[in-house]
Image (cartoon, rainbow, N blue to C red; front, side, top):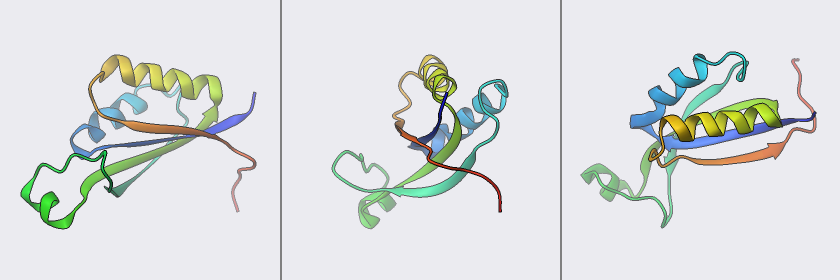
Length: 100
């Protein structure tokens, strides 16, 4: 089975919950990278005064690689645990990965 890259972009207020959920399932997630991001565009709801001024909303992006079946299981787990978390995701094939 081929590996895929699962990318999640989520509001900062749910990031710790998702990270804890991922850490609780080492059988599905070998590891992940989390970084800060800025959400832009018409689908991003700007609520806080600072967001309205800056024109973007703070987000966390989490990326992980694994077999497609396991990454889809991660999505099911997150949806079941946080059904209204407003998480945008995408899956893409991994052509190659390794360490240098």
